[in-house]
Length: 227
Image 1 (cartoon, rainbow, N blue to C red):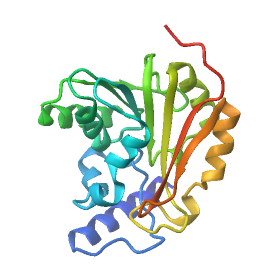
Image 2: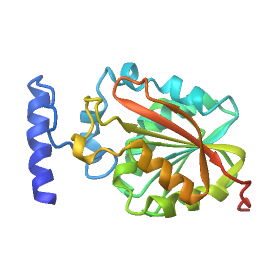
Image 3: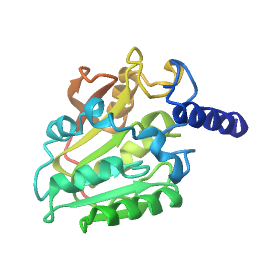
């Protein structure tokens, strides 16, 4: 599997270098997983702001100046920087990933951006190890790579402030775009079932993004906070 994905990475890099977009259904390594930090640019084209619509996602999570938020599975920190800019110097962003190389990439990116309100954390596959309390937690293009999503969401729950929100962004099954093949994408109903099993309830859903959908969850019952 690793060899196959490595070949796919090389082929994809060559195609992008030649200006050829990935064909629909082509294997694309998952964000923040097998990509080395130096290859993250393959996932962060100049048009990503246009189709990702980060401001709309942050609005849906009510992320405002001074908020404390977590970027789980942050990869190279593309969203981390935008979250940090949104919450401002009075806020804080916890940028979590399970790969030390990605954490190093985030630290470099944050340093280049001159941001002092980001704390990086190395989590585990089932526990992001985010300190409580937080106003919102965001997972972008991560869910399909989780080994045990219900356990991870259960571990997230006590880290939320009362009314805290969990936002999950994934590629639509019919959305095309730069994401993984359709067979590797996650149906929103699967995520909703997992979240409900973990003690969350769906607050809102947006399927109107160009390639993706956004699910926003809150605790079904007030969780006992940590710390």
